Length: 119
Length: 122
Image 1: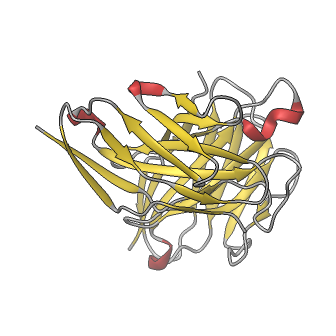
Image 2: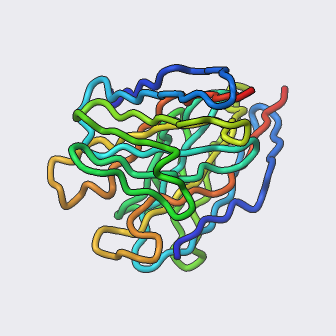
Image 3: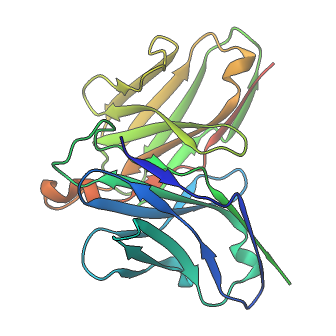
């Protein structure tokens, strides 16, 4: 079965400092990896995805993520955090097409990391 | 683009009533929509996959007679919580996957989410 681990329940960062939100995954075959952000009482907003190609993926609002196959990680990063980045961030994984695992081709989410950016 | 609208955004009702939640893809056609449930400070739990023109696929442990899903058109899926009880109170979120030009790449398309429905059963 596929799974996602977000080891930190909360990350605190000062505005202007770089931020990293960690994500590791487990899946059979090649992964499709996604990051989503959720603001209070709202649905999830898509930030970026890794399918294939360059390991560094750039997404919305200045976020980027680096795919590391050997470490099975897909950490979310931003060079300079903003207070408005404070939200709940979810990493998600799906097995690539044709690799139907115990989880099928469904999207599996991590438990989320609350990011708090302070002045 | 890729806007998903979910309605209502919140609902409070008495125990025993049925509640219908709508999920619409506003600017694209979605053959597949997903229904999730989210508990406070927890991740999203997939409840079912809604397929246009056919029966929904429910996840293990989700009662299909309690959570009725109808996907009658390419832009609308509905979730009806029947005979709701306080333990059904939760945040329900729908999503739809944008179609790929080539069906072979449909799986790498991101899901786009509605803003969720806060359901409170008294």
